[in-house]
Each structure stands twice: as structure tokens, then as C-alpha cells.
Length: 129
Image (cartoon, rainbow, N blue to C red; front, side, top):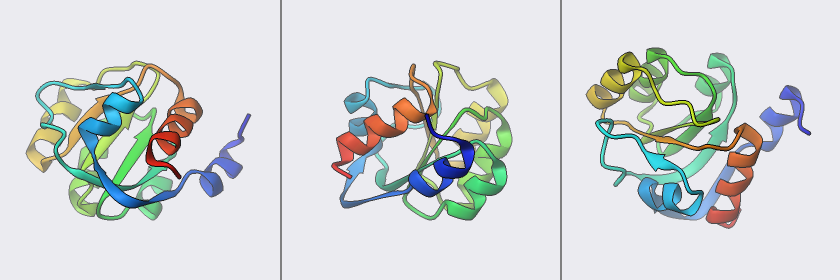
């Protein structure tokens, strides 16, 4: 099992080819949250973490952030960093504030039933990283 310290070092994955968020969601059996976007955004890399400072430090345009955090500030980070998507883990649906903020930012939200580490591994597998 990863500790948070090793998680930060191990979770960035860059892809050779971009993939649409809805294709990634399908590949890991996650669901696209209705009302947050259409999932057509291209994903170039992923970053998984559970601290706002880590998400801010490692996110860049084209990044899908994977997290168990569930608050409207995630969408603000997405807007600031031009992120195409947020993946929430453990089957937790986003609250109305996050959904509305994501819609306003043009950011899609997917929800994975798996935990952070399992979701990250699944995404790496789909991306071929």
C-alpha cells in the first residue's frame, strides 16, 4: 500500500497520445456525472492526490485530477489550471456546489467506485503508462 509521501512521487503519468475523458471513464468503469460536462475533453496526463496543495502543484493543462476531496474549490483549481476533468473516488458523488462550479468552469466530473490507488492503477493501465 502506498503512503501519501510515495503516492505523490508515483502518481503522475504522461501519455503518448491524448484520450477523451469519457473514453477513460469507460475504461475504468467510472461514470460521467450528469450536469458537469460531456466528457469530450482530451486528457494528456493524470495526477492523483488528496491535498489541495499537491493538486495545485502538480496539475497543468490537460491533467485529470484524481482525488477523494469533494468540494467546490476543486472546480476553482480546475478553472485556474485549465483542467479538463476531475475524478472522484470511492463512489462519492459530487455535491451541488462542486457540480455547479465544474459546469461553470467547463470541467467534467467522473466518479470511480474504486479507491484512490486502485483508480490510479486502472487509469495507468488504460493509458498504457
